[in-house]
Length: 516
Image 1 (cartoon, rainbow, N blue to C red):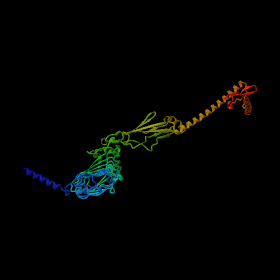
Image 2 (cartoon, rainbow, N blue to C red):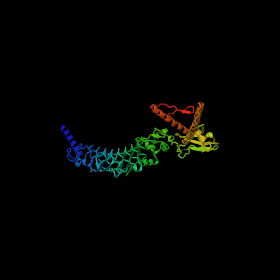
Image 3 (cartoon, rainbow, N blue to C red):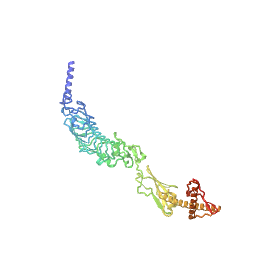
Image 4 (spheres, rainbow, N blue to C red):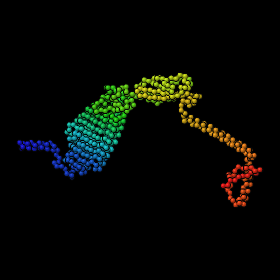
């Protein structure tokens, strides 16, 4: 029994060895056998870790020995690589390439892969600005495999548009193709639009395209299939700048074919009358957004539905707010006795408002009609306000004023004074104030002069202002003072400003001198 059990185990081990033997080395490779040129941490048949080594050329660090080609996981992340140009030999089993965190802007790889059902190319956090035939070319052929799940990660680059991305899966069934373009700078359609091209002739079950966290403003995705479209297409457009879908956008979505699912959360959606078609239970977009993985957007405008999901609105709630007519005349002039008709100047209201209310400073004067004032009088001048509502409200103010002789008086009574009028009024006040000050000053001067003359008359002094006589008296006085200084040797500082009003003594004028 023991011998039979041993023989059975031996046979199983032999069969397992024959099944798994691929003609490669029988012993783990040494450091100099061509399997590890850059001396990266290496685990045979598992991984080659060359991350963070300041490598600039990926080719120099890949195994050159054909017996060392079975390395499922190759890591060249966080290096200084700027381009990758490589051709894999048939039968390559490098299924996961991590090239993230480099400075790659050009990529060209052609490979025929075996035993790689989950092929992944991680090119995130590099320097790609576009995905085109000049900057990116990837030709993959999968041999001997029935089902594959390839993934291409281009997130966190600086990509503005995607021109082409080819994949040849002849003879295989693509269970799921994943293309990650999230966190880039893709903005809109045409030159900056993502254009994904699937050139395979195999069977494609599902395509997932991640375009979240870009700057996309409208749906601009095209996926071209060589044979037939995918059964399921999931597109993540969350956290972009899309505000609505137009009829053209819906046509592009429909052209994708198959079962389409969209994620639109994080967009500032305008749930106005342009999106009213979504309320129709049979609408194409409503059916797409109602599927399991789809996420409908949340309304940002108008205010009446802000914060609600797009699919929760009824037909009556999709409203376009009335807007002020850009050509509106908000100031009307009239003559006394005229008939004045005022119309509320709004546009773009959908549905049409059922009511228009007019308000005047004397109270409400009209509802749901143009405002007509017959035989207009001065009291009608002022501000009129119309309020229009169709679920969203708009108030518009208009002014009625009069032309002719009474315009200025009505304006001053009904309206605040404008800047030119204010300047004119202040100028007149300044002139009047100046004239008043001059008149008052003259009167005060004359009054003081008359008072002084009266006082001199009371003391019996007849004073005449004679400049020649005053000069002679002053000279005589100076001579007498000089003689006094010589006799008493006392020095005085005398100036004409120190002279005090003269006091009469007989016919002579005696001046009092104040000692300094």
